[in-house]
Image (cartoon, rainbow over all chains, first blue to last red; front, side, top):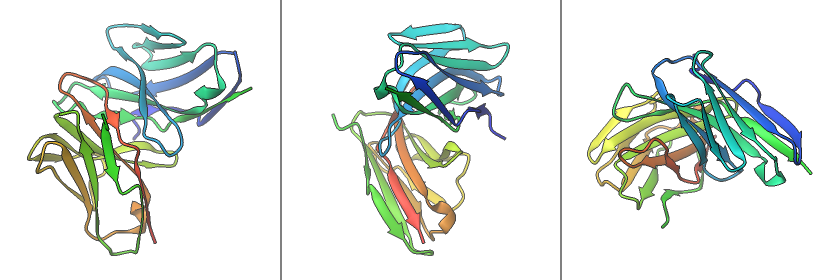
Length: 114
Length: 112
């Protein structure tokens, strides 16, 4: 039973337009959410995060929105650039133990077309 | 800083062979994790460690063992490899108080 779901395996957008990547979760113990970006043959790298006490966090072209009542978060990239083409993983951290394990979604392959 | 270093980067094993994947971090992070990535399934936690000398099971621990004898190193062992263990393995570390992990570049393992 996947606790973090990314229902869109792939997304294509035109350069300069907005990319919106979605993520849903089921575990109410999750209190911190992160987005990771992954290029082929590399490890995931941290992109942006949000605490459950906030509903929005912005960093340059990247904004993450959190809707706790719907257990939904989204990543907006504006404007999208060809270098943004990568797999994006949504991850959630729960506060039930000291290890702060991250639970990952299955990823969304974003392709930004020039 | 090197960050998190994984060795080897690639390996092909025959069914039943054993091997050890090494993860080394130079950031003095307390926490370390091993994940596997499979198509359509994201990253799944195999084992983790909250400090030197301690290890614990994650979501998919069967067929793997781990050791953390030194703070900077986290070893993942496969005693008798199976084709189902064909995957890309990622090691990660986290400092106390942080939420995010720093990942290594991965080990691509094929079991034939």
